Length: 193
Figure 1 (cartoon, rainbow, N blue to C red):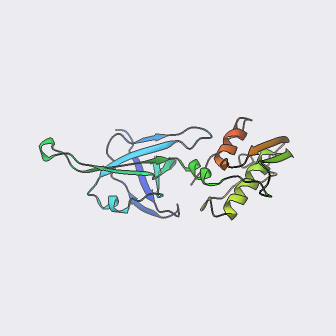
Figure 2 (figure 1 turned 135 degrees about the horizontal axis):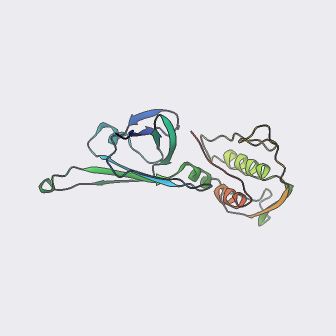
C-alpha cells in the first residue's frame, strides 16, 4: 500500500493550518528550479474545507510528514455533474508556486529618472537583497524573509559569496525576473515554508 499524500490549507499568513483537504485523485504539483511552478487539487465542493478556500491562501503538499512543495490559490472553479452521472459538485483549485510571490516586487530606479538600475562589482546576493528590501518597503512581498545575507550563502552558512559582477536591470521588471536572470549564473532560489 502506498503512503498517502496529505494536502494542507494554510491561511494568508502562511503559518496557520486551516484544514487538511480531502483531495480527489489527480492532484498535481509541478516544481521547477528557480521558477514558481504550479499545482492543482480537486475537492468535494460540499466539504467543510471548501468554504475556507479563498484566493491567496496556500496549499502545501506533504508526503511521509515532510513538506514537498505547494502553491498559492489563484483560481477556484466549481463544477457539477448531473445526478444521472452519479456525480457530485467539485471544486478545482489551482495556482502558482511560492516563488510567484517575487513577481509582486517591481524594480525601479532609485532617483526615478534613470531607465535602469546598475549594480557595479556587486555579488548577486547583494542585488537580490537590495531589490527585495525596496519592494518590501513599498508593501510587496508580505510574509517573506530571506535566509541569506550579502556575505553568506544560506545553503552553506560558512561559504562566503565570491561572485563579483556587474548587473543591470531595466525599470519595471519584477524581483522574480531578476532572480531568473541571476539564476543563469548558477544560483538556486526557492521559497520554503
